Image 1 (tube, rainbow, N blue to C red):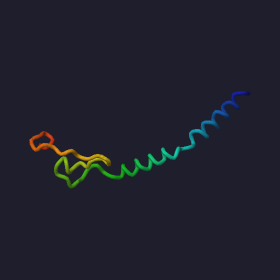
Image 2: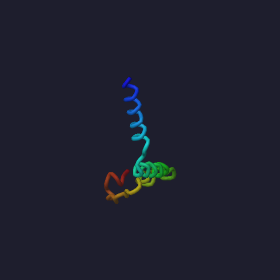
Image 3: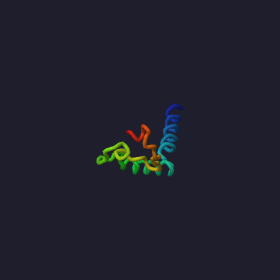
Image 4: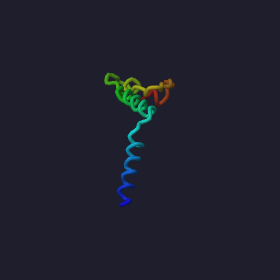
Length: 72
């Protein structure tokens, strides 16, 4: 007889705790969706530097003209 009461209480606690989304998590999800909308591949680029865009917040470092990075 005690088991149904314990199960009902446990279910109620789980529904209350798991049903709430913190504001910070909701903002992170919205920001991730905005970032996912921008493609990292530039279809009109012909070299690695122009073909692949840098992720938001990053920038490319200049390379020496005799380096492997410049060759690529």
